Length: 640
Image (tube, rainbow, N blue to C red):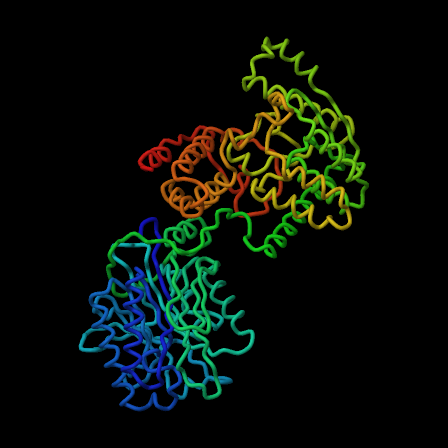
């Protein structure tokens, strides 16, 4: 349970209708299996100790007595298991029958939650047997244990893991306009358990899935949906055991048409951070805590998917849709800026590298949206000491394929003059040697924009901004930065997306884009190697961008502590990078992120397209002189 991770499960046992002893055995078997898998929170289906489809047998005292006896067996079996368990059964309370979920832990009944919304339409006839638990608040004796609290609005709190606070709602409760989980979560619950018996009809699974994931997102909670399945009566209906585990809008695990456990890990610390960050999330104003419990704090082995590239969808279909959406969004942002400023031209420094290529593709699309010719785009290539034939040729070909205006401005003479003016030895290939070139290029672009009544389009991406991998008042500056919230790992996929959609209609354009995608990322500020190859490769200097994007996503967007980020990175990149390698570049990331904030404090505006941006006017406000000592110290404690 370190780092906020808690292993949870939704269970669907095989049942026999009205055979409570058998159902208890199946329930206990899955409890024991869950404990072997280190599950700490376990949910079972609605009325699982009797079967949901008992119909008028629910009115039989023999069934009710058998259900309570079965509950007693479950409670006894839980005594030696380090597990919070929800099981469900019918209970007669004050002469009325209720469909109830019972919380059990370490041989103790913690409380009873009655179902609030009783469906009585189409195939459902629950009101024939059950009464709504709305407003019920009483104490009962159950399985020999006295003073068991019955209330639909109680929250069970783990004493030694304060972030683990569990609420329950039952099946139909989720499907109504105002589910009980709204009240429970806004008053502190971080995990909702839903024992359910939702019969299966065509397409109902997609709606059910959207309900569970949507509710977990709206309430910033984890949601465990345990559905009835094999063994329920087949008279008119089929039950599929559609189990779902969701966290803050994301589906972590799902099973259907199977019995057994659906297991994943939820991150309660992440949920609390999101609630803290959202100033519109309500402050708890009701005292609805029920009984407390404790669980042994053990290491949670992760099985949930941790994507190594969190900014990039894993499926090709989702990836293409994401690329199309972002490409359109950013193009619309630039279109508006060009319109508003009455810009006659858009000026881009085209290096033949990945970032400037994407910026040009976006600008070309924006001009098309405006109904303006591509010749209103002025592509400027500015070769100097580090420019290679490959990148220079690709820049030229790309401008030709897109039909833009094109200029070549060799800045070598101007930079040499500047070296002489400031007394810099050209043989000294220090940062001054590099940055003089970058600033000269920016000056050329700005002055061409002035001369043509245009705007300089920025090409730097989000990953470079996080690392401060730009020359202050050089490529750091522009008049509108189209790539500013697109991380490097996504820049590559966006460029490939444009290449792929043009492969049939514009094969020459796709060929150039493919070669640019194969070119090593480089600022090309140092002379090439003797064979003409790029001498300065960015990822050799600052580390792999896929690692830095991972650190940015989890360390900055979700504020995970460096140790937790390191743990997740090792899990996500196992088999790709060794722990020592990951640690080296994570230390580098935090160092650069802090010391380079002064560059982010004065960046041009540009469109936000994702949940992670570093604009000082939007998502990220940080002092330029903040100290990274605490973050670095935590990483120094790690041994690899």
